[in-house]
Image (tube, rainbow, N blue to C red):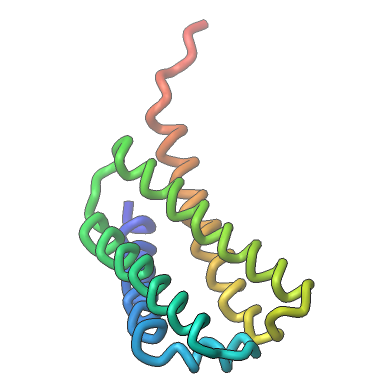
Length: 133
């Protein structure tokens, strides 16, 4: 499925960029989100960078995966992660902990998460045995 390959390639690139930013220039994220930095925030940023490195590697290496249970699992997991990030971003915005710049991240996360959910649903439907009747 070309959609899965393109989405995984784009997600790998975005995740790699976020890894680099969170590890080496976390102040850019703090500025975008309109939140203060500080030592604790930078420690958490460096730790979160490793999750994005993992996402980048998984998405890159699995971009050519054939339709399978593994690809369904990756799609479901990445969808949950992205939609979860979007939900927490919106929660923090409503709470007043971050500024409106978080909406850029939320929009990307909703788009990526929704497309991975679509890939998962399509793959899941194709792998079901036909109904007898």
